[in-house]
Figure 1: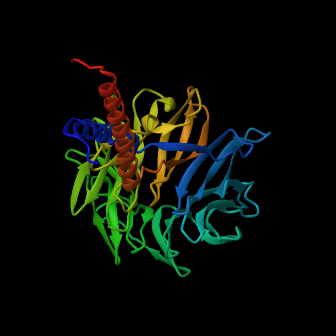
Figure 2: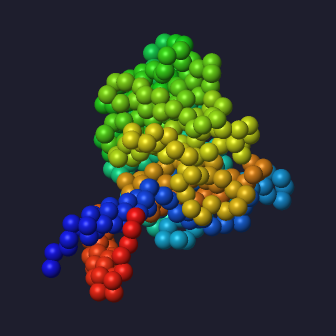
Length: 380
């Protein structure tokens, strides 16, 4: 039996009400997972792969008062301290991890820091003196060699990236994508400039109008680059794409210290924005072209009391974020994984709405029929 017009109108209202009530949960929220404790005072993440595995370093002071740092891998819920080179007083930093589980970083040896890699069995490999910063899914490493020369290592062969013309002999490589495009910074004739290196050539990326320095930190597989541009008013988070530079903005109340640290192929950017003085004044952000810059503290459930998300350093293809939380005094950091809460399936939402309409519509018709049989009428 078909619903009468009045019942149909009510049913239509109930459908939209049900759908709107359900879709309010579609706002992209994150859950927080603390990566655990290494027995050190602070833990800082550095990189994340598409499997949600995170690398970074733990920091503390030994009994002699010396600063000590050890690299770590977080995988399948387990935090593992990485080995280091002999003769280096237990000093290592893990900078990045690719989808094969290869980790790049650096470790102190008897003659200074060496660029190193750890394979998926966590065996350490010495790549000679230098500092490893990033590894592509093709197994290419980038970083710098002493005193400060950007370098690419492919199949065990080192390639110097050179320098921007007119400046000092200085460059550092911080990011590489799966197409061997490398980004970093180099000194030009008027200061430190962000660069893109590709096929043996280094391109000066420049900065925002009036900039004095710029820095490129990460490049995705579409060739979009993020980093920051510095001028007299402070540091601005920026993105370079299609030959143009875009200011990503700042969080409300920002005091002029914003940086973009990573970008994925979905054009999502993460970084930090300072909204109050001191280290405890930093806030991690998520930026996308639709929503602009948003505070991750407003998007995340499960942040411990007295802590804030102070920065985000990596985001993978599933929008998982490697971030750090910082205590209210700015003294301690902990590494965390932010995982997006799945949005409701639109088909299931529709079915739920239709089911609600049928159920409520039948109840409405049943109550109306009962009132007519009992002689009860209603007025507005």
